[in-house]
Length: 376
Image (cartoon, rainbow, N blue to C red; front, side, top):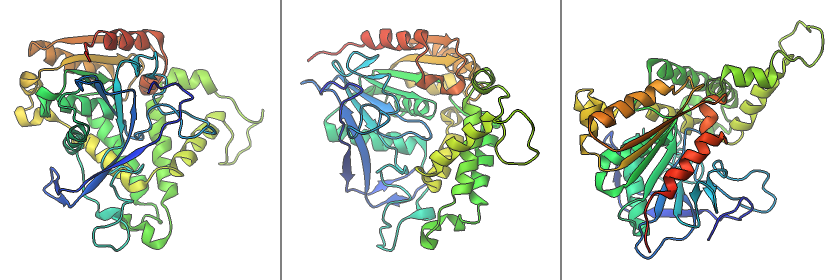
Protein backbone atom coordinates (compact mmCIF):
# COMPACT_ATOMS: atom_id res chain seq x y z
CA UNK A 1 0.00 0.00 0.00
CA UNK A 2 1.34 3.40 -0.95
CA UNK A 3 1.31 5.91 1.89
CA UNK A 4 0.07 9.46 1.53
CA UNK A 5 -0.20 12.06 4.29
CA UNK A 6 -3.90 11.27 4.59
CA UNK A 7 -3.47 7.47 4.57
CA UNK A 8 -4.98 5.64 7.54
CA UNK A 9 -2.36 3.38 9.13
CA UNK A 10 -3.09 0.53 11.54
CA UNK A 11 -0.35 -0.29 14.08
CA UNK A 12 0.55 -3.90 14.85
CA UNK A 13 1.74 -5.53 18.05
CA UNK A 14 4.14 -8.39 17.30
CA UNK A 15 4.82 -10.84 20.13
CA UNK A 16 8.06 -12.73 20.72
CA UNK A 17 7.63 -15.64 23.08
CA UNK A 18 11.22 -16.81 23.62
CA UNK A 19 13.35 -15.40 26.47
CA UNK A 20 15.44 -12.41 25.41
CA UNK A 21 18.76 -11.84 27.16
CA UNK A 22 19.77 -8.20 27.40
CA UNK A 23 23.31 -6.83 27.24
CA UNK A 24 23.31 -6.37 31.02
CA UNK A 25 22.55 -10.08 31.53
CA UNK A 26 18.93 -9.70 32.59
CA UNK A 27 16.31 -11.73 30.77
CA UNK A 28 12.90 -10.74 29.51
CA UNK A 29 10.76 -13.92 29.46
CA UNK A 30 8.93 -12.55 26.42
CA UNK A 31 8.37 -9.19 24.76
CA UNK A 32 6.33 -7.36 22.15
CA UNK A 33 7.17 -4.65 19.63
CA UNK A 34 4.74 -2.07 18.28
CA UNK A 35 5.17 -1.73 14.54
CA UNK A 36 3.76 0.09 11.53
CA UNK A 37 4.47 -0.92 7.94
CA UNK A 38 4.13 1.08 4.73
CA UNK A 39 4.38 -0.12 1.15
CA UNK A 40 4.64 -3.71 -0.03
CA UNK A 41 7.36 -6.28 0.58
CA UNK A 42 8.44 -7.59 -2.82
CA UNK A 43 8.78 -11.25 -3.79
CA UNK A 44 12.51 -11.33 -3.07
CA UNK A 45 11.99 -9.48 0.24
CA UNK A 46 14.92 -7.22 -0.58
CA UNK A 47 13.17 -3.84 -0.63
CA UNK A 48 12.68 -3.47 3.14
CA UNK A 49 13.72 -0.30 4.97
CA UNK A 50 13.82 -0.02 8.76
CA UNK A 51 13.17 3.39 10.33
CA UNK A 52 14.71 3.81 13.80
CA UNK A 53 13.29 6.55 15.98
CA UNK A 54 14.98 9.16 18.13
CA UNK A 55 14.57 9.74 21.87
CA UNK A 56 10.92 10.78 21.92
CA UNK A 57 9.78 9.04 18.73
CA UNK A 58 7.91 5.82 18.14
CA UNK A 59 6.67 3.50 15.40
CA UNK A 60 4.18 6.00 13.97
CA UNK A 61 6.39 7.28 11.17
CA UNK A 62 3.89 8.30 8.50
CA UNK A 63 0.20 8.60 7.70
CA UNK A 64 -2.58 8.95 10.28
CA UNK A 65 -4.32 6.56 12.64
CA UNK A 66 -7.80 7.96 12.00
CA UNK A 67 -9.34 10.65 9.79
CA UNK A 68 -9.51 13.19 12.62
CA UNK A 69 -5.78 13.02 13.45
CA UNK A 70 -4.41 16.56 13.55
CA UNK A 71 -0.89 15.35 12.93
CA UNK A 72 0.62 12.72 10.68
CA UNK A 73 3.52 10.47 11.72
CA UNK A 74 6.70 12.13 12.92
CA UNK A 75 8.56 11.63 9.58
CA UNK A 76 5.62 11.97 7.22
CA UNK A 77 7.56 14.47 5.10
CA UNK A 78 10.22 11.79 4.48
CA UNK A 79 8.26 8.53 4.17
CA UNK A 80 5.40 7.95 1.74
CA UNK A 81 4.32 7.69 -1.87
CA UNK A 82 6.67 9.77 -4.02
CA UNK A 83 8.62 10.99 -0.97
CA UNK A 84 12.37 10.54 -0.41
CA UNK A 85 11.80 7.13 1.21
CA UNK A 86 9.26 6.09 -1.37
CA UNK A 87 6.65 3.56 -0.29
CA UNK A 88 5.89 2.86 -3.97
CA UNK A 89 9.34 1.26 -4.09
CA UNK A 90 10.16 0.25 -0.51
CA UNK A 91 8.49 -1.74 2.24
CA UNK A 92 9.08 0.52 5.23
CA UNK A 93 8.97 -0.66 8.83
CA UNK A 94 8.66 1.69 11.80
CA UNK A 95 9.21 0.20 15.25
CA UNK A 96 8.79 1.44 18.81
CA UNK A 97 11.95 0.50 20.70
CA UNK A 98 11.97 -2.04 23.47
CA UNK A 99 11.50 -0.09 26.71
CA UNK A 100 9.36 2.50 24.97
CA UNK A 101 5.91 3.67 25.94
CA UNK A 102 3.97 3.45 22.68
CA UNK A 103 3.02 -0.22 22.72
CA UNK A 104 6.32 -2.12 22.89
CA UNK A 105 7.21 -3.94 26.08
CA UNK A 106 8.52 -1.41 28.56
CA UNK A 107 7.97 0.07 32.02
CA UNK A 108 4.22 0.46 31.38
CA UNK A 109 3.83 -3.23 30.47
CA UNK A 110 2.46 -5.85 32.88
CA UNK A 111 5.11 -7.31 35.17
CA UNK A 112 5.65 -11.06 34.59
CA UNK A 113 4.77 -11.62 38.24
CA UNK A 114 1.24 -10.50 37.46
CA UNK A 115 1.41 -7.70 40.00
CA UNK A 116 1.00 -4.35 38.27
CA UNK A 117 3.37 -2.94 35.67
CA UNK A 118 7.16 -3.15 35.48
CA UNK A 119 7.68 0.49 36.41
CA UNK A 120 11.24 0.99 37.67
CA UNK A 121 11.81 -2.79 37.60
CA UNK A 122 12.07 -2.78 33.82
CA UNK A 123 15.74 -3.50 33.05
CA UNK A 124 18.17 -1.11 31.41
CA UNK A 125 18.34 -1.50 27.64
CA UNK A 126 21.05 -0.50 25.18
CA UNK A 127 21.26 0.34 21.49
CA UNK A 128 22.63 -3.17 20.95
CA UNK A 129 19.54 -4.64 22.63
CA UNK A 130 17.30 -2.62 20.33
CA UNK A 131 19.15 -3.81 17.23
CA UNK A 132 19.02 -7.43 18.37
CA UNK A 133 15.27 -7.17 18.96
CA UNK A 134 14.90 -5.54 15.53
CA UNK A 135 16.75 -8.49 13.99
CA UNK A 136 14.06 -10.77 15.44
CA UNK A 137 11.49 -8.42 13.91
CA UNK A 138 13.20 -8.80 10.52
CA UNK A 139 13.04 -12.59 10.96
CA UNK A 140 9.31 -12.29 11.67
CA UNK A 141 8.79 -10.62 8.27
CA UNK A 142 11.15 -13.04 6.52
CA UNK A 143 13.63 -10.24 5.79
CA UNK A 144 17.17 -11.60 5.67
CA UNK A 145 18.72 -8.25 4.72
CA UNK A 146 17.50 -4.66 4.99
CA UNK A 147 17.87 -2.57 1.87
CA UNK A 148 18.52 0.26 4.32
CA UNK A 149 18.30 1.16 7.99
CA UNK A 150 17.59 4.86 8.48
CA UNK A 151 17.57 7.04 11.57
CA UNK A 152 18.19 10.50 12.93
CA UNK A 153 19.85 11.25 16.27
CA UNK A 154 19.42 8.17 18.50
CA UNK A 155 17.94 6.47 15.42
CA UNK A 156 21.21 7.07 13.58
CA UNK A 157 23.07 5.29 16.36
CA UNK A 158 20.86 2.27 15.77
CA UNK A 159 21.57 2.36 12.04
CA UNK A 160 25.30 2.44 12.82
CA UNK A 161 24.96 -0.43 15.32
CA UNK A 162 23.18 -2.51 12.68
CA UNK A 163 26.24 -2.30 10.43
CA UNK A 164 28.42 -3.54 13.28
CA UNK A 165 26.12 -6.16 14.81
CA UNK A 166 24.82 -7.72 11.59
CA UNK A 167 27.16 -6.64 8.75
CA UNK A 168 25.62 -9.07 6.28
CA UNK A 169 22.01 -8.05 7.02
CA UNK A 170 22.14 -4.39 5.94
CA UNK A 171 23.08 -2.93 2.54
CA UNK A 172 22.81 0.80 3.34
CA UNK A 173 22.92 2.84 6.55
CA UNK A 174 21.59 6.39 6.64
CA UNK A 175 23.02 8.05 9.77
CA UNK A 176 21.52 11.52 10.12
CA UNK A 177 22.30 14.20 12.75
CA UNK A 178 23.92 11.54 14.87
CA UNK A 179 27.21 10.53 16.46
CA UNK A 180 29.35 7.44 17.13
CA UNK A 181 29.22 8.42 20.83
CA UNK A 182 27.94 11.22 23.03
CA UNK A 183 30.12 14.09 24.13
CA UNK A 184 30.58 14.81 27.83
CA UNK A 185 28.29 17.82 27.39
CA UNK A 186 25.52 15.63 25.99
CA UNK A 187 25.88 13.16 28.85
CA UNK A 188 25.65 16.10 31.24
CA UNK A 189 22.43 17.35 29.60
CA UNK A 190 20.93 13.88 29.90
CA UNK A 191 21.81 13.63 33.56
CA UNK A 192 20.25 16.99 34.38
CA UNK A 193 17.07 15.84 32.60
CA UNK A 194 17.05 12.59 34.58
CA UNK A 195 17.61 14.42 37.84
CA UNK A 196 14.61 16.64 37.10
CA UNK A 197 12.49 13.49 36.84
CA UNK A 198 14.03 11.49 39.68
CA UNK A 199 13.74 14.34 42.19
CA UNK A 200 10.08 15.03 41.36
CA UNK A 201 8.12 14.27 44.58
CA UNK A 202 5.72 12.17 42.52
CA UNK A 203 8.47 9.92 41.12
CA UNK A 204 8.44 7.43 44.05
CA UNK A 205 11.57 5.62 42.90
CA UNK A 206 9.98 5.00 39.51
CA UNK A 207 6.95 3.23 40.97
CA UNK A 208 4.62 6.19 40.62
CA UNK A 209 1.88 3.98 39.13
CA UNK A 210 1.47 2.31 42.53
CA UNK A 211 0.73 5.71 44.00
CA UNK A 212 -1.63 6.70 41.16
CA UNK A 213 0.44 9.76 40.26
CA UNK A 214 2.78 10.83 37.47
CA UNK A 215 6.04 12.82 37.80
CA UNK A 216 4.79 15.34 35.26
CA UNK A 217 6.69 18.29 36.71
CA UNK A 218 10.04 16.60 36.37
CA UNK A 219 9.31 15.26 32.90
CA UNK A 220 8.04 18.68 31.83
CA UNK A 221 11.27 20.37 32.94
CA UNK A 222 13.38 17.65 31.31
CA UNK A 223 11.58 18.16 28.02
CA UNK A 224 11.79 21.95 28.19
CA UNK A 225 15.54 21.80 28.72
CA UNK A 226 15.98 19.15 26.04
CA UNK A 227 13.88 21.11 23.57
CA UNK A 228 16.17 24.13 23.94
CA UNK A 229 19.14 21.97 22.97
CA UNK A 230 17.35 20.64 19.89
CA UNK A 231 16.91 24.16 18.47
CA UNK A 232 19.43 26.61 17.11
CA UNK A 233 19.83 30.01 18.73
CA UNK A 234 19.16 31.72 15.42
CA UNK A 235 15.99 29.71 14.78
CA UNK A 236 14.64 30.26 18.27
CA UNK A 237 15.52 33.94 18.20
CA UNK A 238 14.10 34.40 14.72
CA UNK A 239 10.81 32.81 15.79
CA UNK A 240 10.35 34.52 19.15
CA UNK A 241 13.08 37.10 19.73
CA UNK A 242 12.34 38.95 22.98
CA UNK A 243 8.64 39.25 22.25
CA UNK A 244 6.54 39.80 25.34
CA UNK A 245 2.85 39.28 25.91
CA UNK A 246 2.55 42.77 27.35
CA UNK A 247 4.67 45.84 26.55
CA UNK A 248 5.80 46.42 30.15
CA UNK A 249 7.64 44.12 32.54
CA UNK A 250 5.25 42.45 34.99
CA UNK A 251 7.79 41.66 37.72
CA UNK A 252 6.61 38.09 38.37
CA UNK A 253 7.66 34.54 37.46
CA UNK A 254 4.71 33.67 35.27
CA UNK A 255 4.90 33.78 31.47
CA UNK A 256 6.02 37.12 30.07
CA UNK A 257 8.14 36.20 27.03
CA UNK A 258 6.67 34.27 24.11
CA UNK A 259 9.56 31.80 24.18
CA UNK A 260 8.55 30.89 27.76
CA UNK A 261 5.02 30.15 26.58
CA UNK A 262 6.35 27.99 23.76
CA UNK A 263 8.63 25.91 25.99
CA UNK A 264 6.00 25.40 28.66
CA UNK A 265 3.53 24.26 26.02
CA UNK A 266 6.08 21.78 24.68
CA UNK A 267 6.78 20.50 28.19
CA UNK A 268 3.10 20.11 29.03
CA UNK A 269 2.34 18.32 25.78
CA UNK A 270 5.24 15.91 26.18
CA UNK A 271 4.58 15.11 29.85
CA UNK A 272 1.04 14.17 28.90
CA UNK A 273 2.07 11.54 26.35
CA UNK A 274 5.46 10.11 27.36
CA UNK A 275 6.38 7.82 30.25
CA UNK A 276 9.04 9.08 32.65
CA UNK A 277 10.68 5.67 33.12
CA UNK A 278 10.98 5.25 29.35
CA UNK A 279 12.59 8.68 29.13
CA UNK A 280 15.17 7.63 31.72
CA UNK A 281 15.90 4.40 29.85
CA UNK A 282 16.25 6.10 26.48
CA UNK A 283 18.66 8.77 27.72
CA UNK A 284 20.81 6.15 29.46
CA UNK A 285 21.00 4.10 26.26
CA UNK A 286 22.24 7.26 24.53
CA UNK A 287 24.94 7.69 27.18
CA UNK A 288 26.13 4.09 26.94
CA UNK A 289 26.46 3.99 23.15
CA UNK A 290 30.16 3.80 22.25
CA UNK A 291 30.86 0.92 19.82
CA UNK A 292 34.53 1.87 19.46
CA UNK A 293 35.12 1.15 23.17
CA UNK A 294 35.34 -2.60 22.43
CA UNK A 295 38.13 -1.88 19.93
CA UNK A 296 40.42 0.16 22.15
CA UNK A 297 38.41 3.29 21.31
CA UNK A 298 39.53 2.95 17.71
CA UNK A 299 36.45 3.73 15.60
CA UNK A 300 38.19 2.87 12.35
CA UNK A 301 39.00 -0.57 13.70
CA UNK A 302 35.42 -1.00 14.92
CA UNK A 303 34.19 -0.30 11.38
CA UNK A 304 36.57 -2.73 9.71
CA UNK A 305 33.91 -5.47 9.42
CA UNK A 306 31.22 -3.19 8.04
CA UNK A 307 29.76 -4.17 4.65
CA UNK A 308 27.07 -1.53 4.24
CA UNK A 309 27.37 1.67 2.26
CA UNK A 310 26.79 4.84 4.28
CA UNK A 311 24.93 8.09 3.85
CA UNK A 312 25.85 10.56 6.62
CA UNK A 313 24.21 13.95 7.07
CA UNK A 314 24.80 16.75 9.57
CA UNK A 315 23.42 20.27 10.00
CA UNK A 316 25.41 23.46 10.45
CA UNK A 317 23.37 24.79 13.40
CA UNK A 318 23.11 21.48 15.27
CA UNK A 319 25.14 22.00 18.43
CA UNK A 320 23.71 18.97 20.24
CA UNK A 321 25.09 16.58 17.59
CA UNK A 322 27.45 18.92 15.82
CA UNK A 323 28.90 18.28 12.34
CA UNK A 324 32.22 17.42 13.99
CA UNK A 325 30.62 14.24 15.34
CA UNK A 326 29.63 13.22 11.80
CA UNK A 327 33.12 14.17 10.58
CA UNK A 328 34.54 11.69 13.09
CA UNK A 329 32.39 8.90 11.66
CA UNK A 330 33.09 9.81 8.03
CA UNK A 331 36.84 9.99 8.63
CA UNK A 332 36.82 6.56 10.27
CA UNK A 333 34.77 5.07 7.41
CA UNK A 334 37.16 6.48 4.84
CA UNK A 335 40.10 5.19 6.85
CA UNK A 336 38.51 1.75 6.92
CA UNK A 337 37.98 1.98 3.13
CA UNK A 338 34.19 1.90 3.36
CA UNK A 339 31.79 3.58 0.94
CA UNK A 340 30.34 6.78 2.38
CA UNK A 341 28.49 9.80 1.05
CA UNK A 342 28.43 12.88 3.28
CA UNK A 343 26.40 16.07 3.22
CA UNK A 344 26.61 18.98 5.65
CA UNK A 345 23.46 21.06 5.34
CA UNK A 346 23.21 24.77 6.04
CA UNK A 347 20.18 25.02 8.29
CA UNK A 348 18.85 27.26 11.07
CA UNK A 349 16.71 24.46 12.57
CA UNK A 350 19.37 23.07 14.92
CA UNK A 351 19.27 19.38 15.84
CA UNK A 352 15.61 19.14 14.84
CA UNK A 353 16.66 19.85 11.24
CA UNK A 354 16.57 16.12 10.51
CA UNK A 355 12.78 16.35 10.88
CA UNK A 356 12.43 19.45 8.70
CA UNK A 357 12.32 20.12 4.97
CA UNK A 358 15.54 21.93 4.13
CA UNK A 359 15.61 21.27 0.35
CA UNK A 360 19.31 20.26 0.06
CA UNK A 361 18.78 17.64 2.80
CA UNK A 362 15.50 16.29 1.42
CA UNK A 363 16.92 16.15 -2.10
CA UNK A 364 20.07 14.37 -0.95
CA UNK A 365 18.11 11.66 0.85
CA UNK A 366 15.82 11.28 -2.17
CA UNK A 367 18.77 10.91 -4.56
CA UNK A 368 20.49 8.39 -2.31
CA UNK A 369 17.39 6.25 -1.84
CA UNK A 370 16.64 6.30 -5.59
CA UNK A 371 20.00 4.65 -6.20
CA UNK A 372 19.36 1.76 -3.82
CA UNK A 373 18.79 -1.27 -6.02
CA UNK A 374 15.89 -3.62 -5.44
CA UNK A 375 14.35 -6.19 -7.71
CA UNK A 376 11.13 -8.13 -7.49
